[in-house]
Image (cartoon, rainbow, N blue to C red; front, side):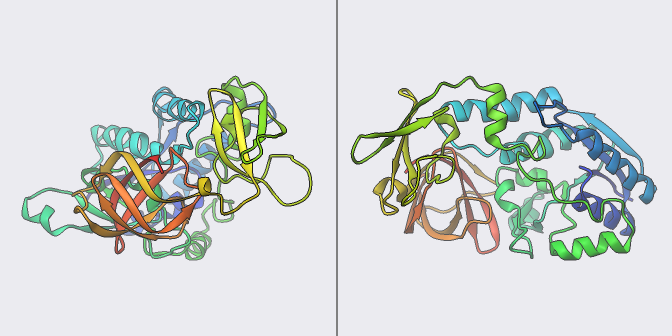
Length: 355
């Protein structure tokens, strides 16, 4: 009987994941990853409540629950990375870094050393054997989009290795969210009606603006009309703004302004009312830190690229670390991830370094 350690966050998805694996006959152990426990002014970190919910479900399922304290590593690998990227004027994705460094590296390695054969999470994604992996005797898996397009989370998983996926189970890949809720209700799980968490991946409902205010010192600066050079207003820090942003500018009535550029050295944010401003659109992307789950894309291969979670899949040609898109895409910021798909398979992707 294979022993599977399930990452249990206290939410409905991971609860149903554990329940399904128990019913399938696995030797299941729950693990709560204590990644962040710090309260922020006026905002309480929900970690204790989430742990309590995970414990309730574990009792219901008759499984043990361990707590892995990853706070130091999480701060270094995820939080410090995110802060540095925002200070550089980029738009990072901490959820992607969390999966790369914590869930499918630190958690996986710790669980295997602790006696697990495999790990499982509540991600909406599917796995499949790859022919060449079997031929060469490697235990690797291909990553495929989830059956539920609205809940598909492969965008956040593109930096996981095929080797790590070979030791992973995604029981929810074939289900819709509504079906998962129904499964939780049928089993009377304590988290069946619990709302999904929003905001930053590790601090619950806290928005990125509020989080950055606590950890990064900023100074006010000017909001400038890109075309006229006129100062239109003031902002409280250029790091809070990203390309294409419309809300939070407080520039009065009339047609809306959009962020089209920013100068971090001068702490200035540039805006325009023109949705067709060339700064807002790009059809050629330069990538860095490229990661392939198994084998790299072929030069000149026609793929599809996703530039944000739940974003549309755009046809593109991959060549020498760059992407030539068949249609221009709006508001692609440096630091975003470009995830590459061949059919339903996620090949990998990279960080946008230029457009």
